[in-house]
Image 1: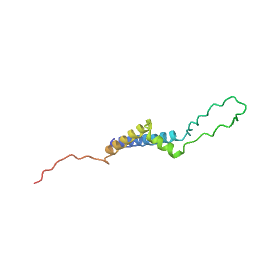
Image 2: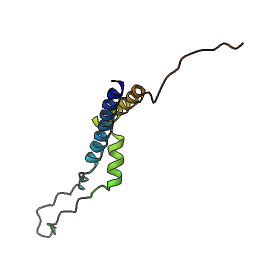
Image 3: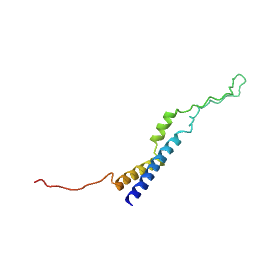
Image 4: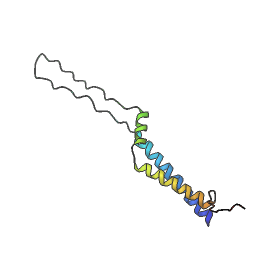
Length: 107
C-alpha cells in the first residue's frame, strides 16, 4: 500500500510541475505589442502633409517575454511549488528519503 501511495503522489507531483511549466510558457507565447508612440494632432491646414500610414507596432522579443513571465508570480508558480512538495512526500513515502533522529552518548 505504501508503494501505491508513493507512485500516485509522485505522478501527481510531476503533473503539477509540468502543468506549471506549460502555463508559464503559454503566458509568454502570445505576442505583446508595445504601445505606439503618441501622434501629435494635425491642424486643419492645407499646407500640412498628412501621412496615412500608421507606424509599425513594436514586438517584444521572445526572450524578454519569457523572463517577464517567470518574474511575475502566477498560479503556475503555485502549481510548481505544490508539485515539488508532492514529489518530496512521494520520496518520503517510498523510503527514498528517511529521517533518523537519534542520539548516542560517547563512552
